[in-house]
Length: 345
Image 1 (cartoon, rainbow, N blue to C red):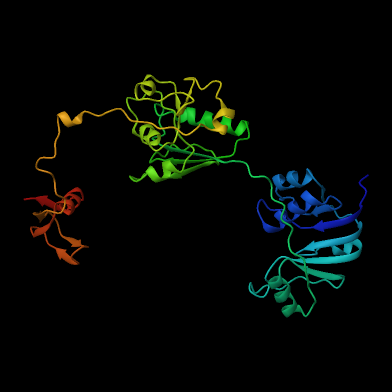
Image 2 (cartoon, helix red, strand yellow):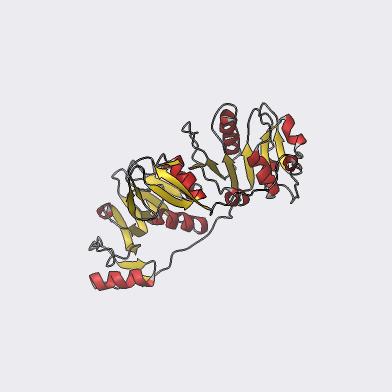
């Protein structure tokens, strides 16, 4: 039979997946262990309960009487008539006046404590009750490094969709925290809470530079711009074993991690640890033997085109009628042509 006596209890009807009271209880449990947390709601978050249970006892209230020295109430003291305590202390977590809320005050309360001066002040102004300042305890966990991954790819078979799923699962299995930005216009999304999908964009290098790794798990590549771009920015890549990588200057564990083609034996620990800084030089391009800058294109050169339909010209703020001759620079002509609004004269 459960012993319902304890020195201190904290009651919160529902432990949510996220929230200030949940964090308040967690930080207290990291420093003190002579209290029990009671909750009532069946929908209370199981992860929060498990986290608290590592340090203090957590009990679901089933209607039994509770005996304690002090009972601390967070928001609604709905079971106070079932708790025999020498002191009933209500913890004020909210700026009640600012939020136009009415605090639940029970006649059995012997003391009120607020988590900040403003919380105490607003509570006292509303109720006329004295409220003692008792700042929240903050006992930070030692932060774990979060791997920042990035991919810019279609989510097709040849681009390694299934291998991305396996790689993410492997990181999860090893308890590695990671955030994975995937720039794609592919709707065959991967269900992974650590992946954030981004719309494709042309200026992606800033995002690549902020990553720990670019991940490209294709089954075949003939060059792969995103890998070369990342390497030139000093960002190592995680790739599957393909012939192209050594050809363009990738070296396993020097400027990249080359995984087994079948994705076996992924070196998670070494990936999490990271690589030393490196310099990468892309393969020399010889396109200059075919191309030059004679007759260089000038996007600002004025030209003429004819309206192929009636449309509102957002630049000139006029209606263009079909057949109108429009003077504009070459760049705008190309844009209007791509929209099907003009024909080239």
